Image (cartoon, rainbow, N blue to C red; front, side, top):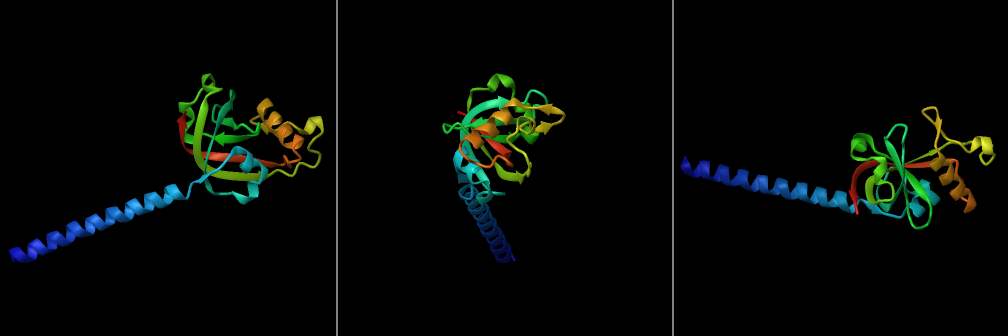
Length: 163
């Protein structure tokens, strides 16, 4: 009876150990699935990276002063991407503008199909009844490089680090 109980306990310990190894492998695989990429690559070829977990670095170029739930990260190319902060919005403020930031999240894009994009009255992206100058500047930077600005890019933040 004691021997059966001992074997049962030994089996349970081994099974628990295997379970934690499987979990460690899954965590390692999740980290490996994160695509480390530049902002420039994301915004110039957005359809290649949709719904991928990405990690980008850049300067916190603009913090939304209206809703406080999004920001823009700009890299050395001069191009920027919008980051939707979600539950982490309370960890950011406008005083952080200019800080170097590493962001991890799910990359999304949306085709806006603005027919007359480029005319002054159509360059403004409306968001909660306000026009955001940083969005306009981002679109203009894309147009200067011959990139279609009618594809809106964003990262749904899952984690960040101030560098």
